[in-house]
Structures are given as structure tokens and as C-alpha cells.
Length: 68
Image (tube, rainbow, N blue to C red; front, side, top):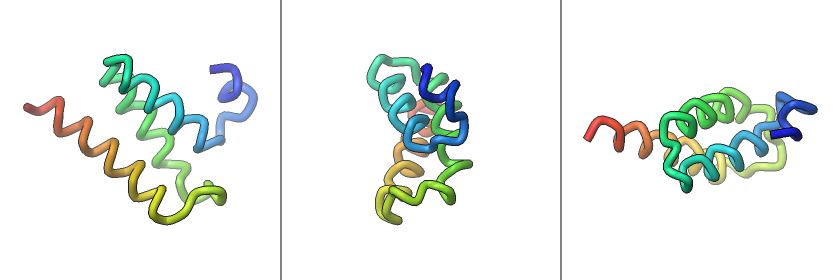
């Protein structure tokens, strides 16, 4: 994703990419991307605390999916 190449610390970009990967069935890729997003959550000033919790929840749900 070009925007992440230009700004590799853009948490919202990783969230968008992870969600797209999840919807396309790229679960392993999505989990890796969610991990990058989660690592940057503290710097994501445009996200509310509730939105940050939702991102963590989405990542956890995917990891659970892989263990079933």
C-alpha cells in the first residue's frame, strides 16, 4: 500500500489494510498487519479509545479463528 510506504507509522492505514485483507480471506496477512497497527495505537490520535479497543478485538477474533 503506497500510503504506508510514504508513512510507515500511520496506524489508521494499517487498520484499513488489515480489514481489507481479512475481508479477502488473507487471515495470516491480516493478523500481521493488525499487529503493526496495534503497535502504533498509542500514537493514533485520531482514534477514540473505543475504536482502539475494537481494533484489538478484531485482531484477537482472527487469531481465535485460526485455532479452531
